[in-house]
Amino acid sequence: MTTMEMEYRSDIYGERGILLGAVHGIVESLWRRFVGQGMDKEEAFRQTVESITGPISRKISREGIKAVYDSLSGDNRKIFEKAYSAAYHPAFEILMECYQEVSSGNEIRSVVLAGERLKRYPFGTIDNTEMWKVGERVRAERKEDAIPVNPVTAGIYIAAMIAQIDVLRENGHSYSEIVNESVIEAVDSLNPYMHYKGVAHMVDNCSTTARLGSRKWAPRFDYNLWQLAYPELESAADAQLIKDFQDHPVHQPVSVLAELRPSVDISLQG
Image (cartoon, helix red, strand yellow):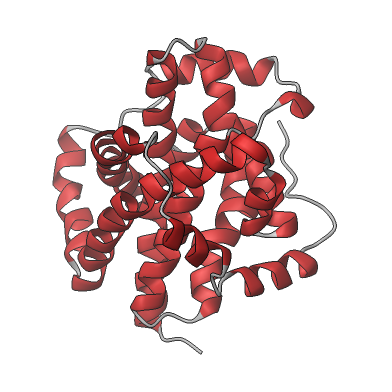
């Protein structure tokens, strides 16, 4: 059971979190990091955006969140654990603040106030930077079976997803809301569309509320990860955080939903 207030909170919060704002900030910061480390720009796009919207999302949709971790072995699993450990608390901090802004009414107040600004400065698009231009070429030449599950990308993305889930749990939301706004809408609706048309296209074709939310919170995820998570990627994994992830109660309902999902994926055309 839920209430209109709790549904409103989880919906607006989810848009600013893993559904749009978080994934937007995560892929932009990771792409810059990989390119800065010497990776080819197109390969960096495959290892970040394509990895999340393609195989990572499909694995979560069909088998559950933990299945991504279980599919990794050896060094890749260790890399995932380090990335997850480095990113969980920086992501949780932003998501906790975001939930407070939504539940207090500040977030919607900021959307209302933006109406006057938008009359003077209408929305531009977010696909004008080099990364998104590279992405157009990558999608045009995509070989689906060649898209990798990058363990750093997977660890960062899933850490943010679990952090979002934990914020909702702490604030008394039902599992139907928690799983819908943190997992199902991402991997079964928005991410497949992003895979087809691009993250930037998804952000730029949402509601005004969602577009404002993504633009406001994506830079916060970008900055917090860049400042607090990425410097810790070479540190030892937090054994307790990894155990909490492995034993997380959300895995059971997500696995049940994976069994109940339709046998076909979302249809995207033209």
